[in-house]
Length: 105
Image (cartoon, rainbow, N blue to C red; front, side):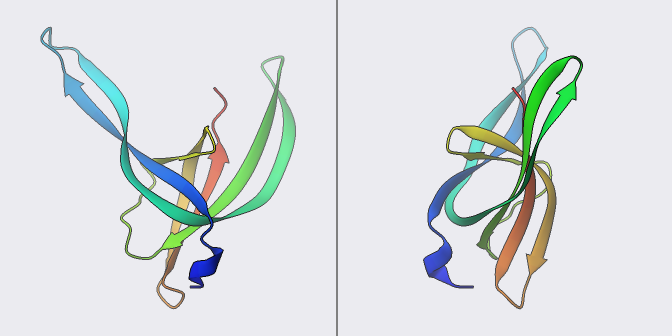
C-alpha cells in the first residue's frame, strides 16, 4: 500500500436503531470512522428508471487494512452517499478495496 495515494477524506457511516419512548424503532446513520482513501471511478451511466433520468456511478475506495468495514455500512464522500456492494480484503497489499454505487436521493 502506498500511503501517498490516500489523498481523499471519506466517512464511513453505520446504521443504528433506537427505540423511542413510544416503542417505535428509529433508524439513524451515524459516523463510524473517518479516514483517508484512494478513489477510483470505475463507470458511470445515465439510466431512465420510472420515467426519471438517474445518473449512476460506480466508485472503488481503497483504505488501509485495519479498518472494520462491511457491506451494511455506507460511505460519505464529497457530500454524496455511496452504498457498499462488496468489500475485498487484500492482505498482500495491506488494503481493503470497497466497491460502491452512488445512492440516488
